[in-house]
Length: 199
Image (cartoon, rainbow, N blue to C red; front, side, top):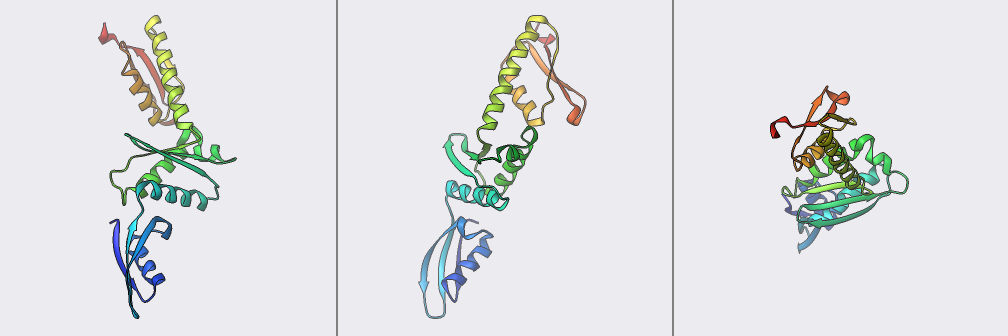
């Protein structure tokens, strides 16, 4: 539900009742006064459009955790790209191998989908995700070229599940190589190998 009508003895009470119905904070909504009588005030309340809602929600989450972020939101055909910058806390928000960033992505996406179910959001911190993705693609391509030249398997540094997906996507563009994993969890080794089936 993104829209609700609410009543109260005063405007503040009507707003409070509407917030309870939608389960949001006042910063996330816009309201319009429908009628105001001696005993009752009636308002129409609506969750803000996606960009403003995304901005307010992200700001609230980060400030509640003690961060002072600068948030930049852009939109393209893939959805919203939300880039967060802080003065001295970017590394904390990114976390080891981007795990904290992925957790932040999950929280923001889940909360936004309550009101914008088809919304797509990519959360980043100081462009880390873009840099990391580009680095992984270039490294995977370089190693794949060596594998093709030498005919020998080569191991990548340990990757997270999401990083492995990025590498797999890039390698799908290169004929003659395949990727497989050895081990489980943090000790998983990702191997790029010649694809014998292509011969």
